[in-house]
Amino acid sequence: MRSLILYKPDPEIERTFRLRRKKQRIEEQRREARMDSSMAGEERRTLYNFITPGIQGITSSIARLTVDADNFELKLALISMVHQSQFGETPLEDPNLHLLVFLEVCDMLKLKGVSSDAIRLRLFPFSLRDKARAWLYSLLSACLTTWDELTKVFLAKFFPPSKTASLRSQITNFLQIEDETLYEAWEHFKDLLYLCPYHGLQCWMII
Image (tube, helix red, strand yellow):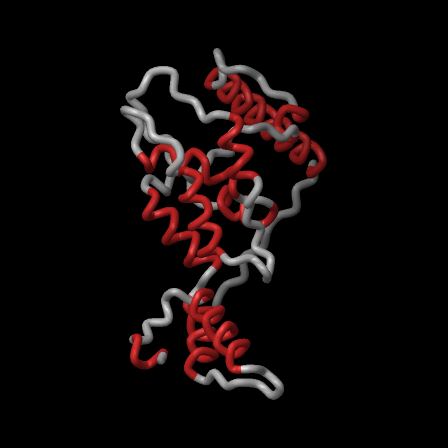
């Protein structure tokens, strides 16, 4: 038979408990002392400092390209022109048209020692508003270093393959609606082609 192990009750359990608690407090004080010594020389922060929002960690997703030109700055008039055709991700806005208009404005500025990418990347955030601008700042810090990268990411977000497939289907299945003249139907058809420059249809198929 397995022998039973009987534990003898402690007649002074309260005293034993107090001694254990005292030992725990001493160990905690020693740990706190070690932490204080390791933090020596560092700035103490209050709870208010921890909960107060700051700008630390808020960075742009567009890298700041090096500019060799002296006294380079974006003129207020140029920024105002970009502001006049901002993109905000509404259903009526065309991201391809937005890029086209934006490039036309950027091409008005040519400076020696300043690349086209440097100008476009600096100006592009001013061309967005609302959700579109919030999306740009939600990307990884300095992940966009060229204009080609920016346009690919922009179109992947606001002109995804699903939208291309939908417009391509409308083009291939296009029909003249009732009471629509041939001229009106042709204009409607051209609008679809313009909205989907990536339709991939050959000229003879379109005709």
